[in-house]
Length: 282
Image (cartoon, rainbow, N blue to C red; front, side, top):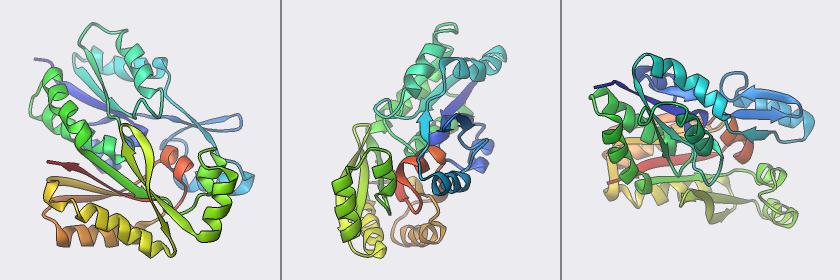
């Protein structure tokens, strides 16, 4: 039986330690400032992205890895005799899955399995982590696919966005909405539903209020949580992430609560001080 290697993309937002310890391979998306192409997490980090946005007043564009990028990433692993399971960014948000599927067709049938996470950030990361554990236990690609696909609709991803500025600049929030939201200090709570981002709450007032709403939303589902893993994922909100982690650990039975930072693709769409809670339901 061939060994299986798990691949994901850079929007999965796991820590370097987790990628390394579970031998998860990462294919980066691109961040584009004018004519400059950067590899997410490799040649640009969120701090530098925010500096460039501040300097230029413009947001970068983002792009999926090309089929050739995927072929080049997959080829050495296939040559070693290992099979691949790739779990990537929702097809509702990116052409990443489409391009990985095109690349998979370049290899013998069954050697590369592509799974659409229907999610983003550590919603993908959680699936990749589960898949990597299964691969470590000797599961085949088909077995891993059968394990992961039923989990996809049970992944809960919800996060607060601190400013409408990035959504506005990125064309995801109209000028009127941006103006009114800024005046009223509205902070949207966004949830991933059916593979896409949907605003579920608009919290008016202090950030602490939005933060507690996010926490309350998660704790309301604590009896349905898979207690193995939970992620607190943030961009430039480290202290608040620690606070949320402490609350989750005190009020639930989750065994491993990880804090991770978002990469540049998520940061370019949501902006600084974004914070999310990600877990699987039983």
